Image (cartoon, rainbow, N blue to C red):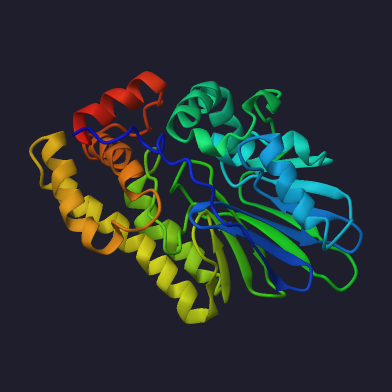
Length: 315
């Protein structure tokens, strides 16, 4: 019997948890749905990620407003995927910040990604008619972008660690608290999506650079907040292991279907019960197969291509 496409049958609401990680530092986790966060400056807010629609983002902001009424000056987007960016208009931010490559990817494939993700994960797109269009950054950077939080709050440093989940992922680092918002470069107790990834670079130098910050609290793209040095190291190690097992299994396969079956068999015992594992794996293997066979940049996912890959590999 064919499995439902991607997360199209995942219609149950997830329980959201707002956590205060330090004075003026907030994270909202949601049982494997995309995580978001916020950091208070002396007289302004920096928000991290925007969710899939303005309505979904507005619900997050309502919860945040129970803790702070400061105006939102910066909205930081870790990468270009629709479920992370299309709710941006709800924030009314003065500045929307991404990496340079993220802006290029929005221009190149933003429309297709929107259609693809909406079909894959309809539950996340609460009142999709509220989306005014693609989200465009108003400030970009190539290496680092530092926000002075004012007073004695220190800096928030946005940094590029290399190609990984996409070409343009950034992390947000709070040195004063040793807290990192890592976007989808790291997942904690949640499966990886690698359909637009650079697996070899991600599993090596990029994760090495993420680890080099020495975070003691880490908010990944999905899953629970990783706490303590050991917890952060475990989340990074889990991410690296997932990538390396996929690379090992796919590199020895003779066909794409064999690559998927091998990867599923190897990963499922440890990761199969984690959020979006079954959803992601066909797209992950398809991209990795391309990468290992000389396709340098990820092919653009469209709603039509999504279905073709799913039917070939997962049904």
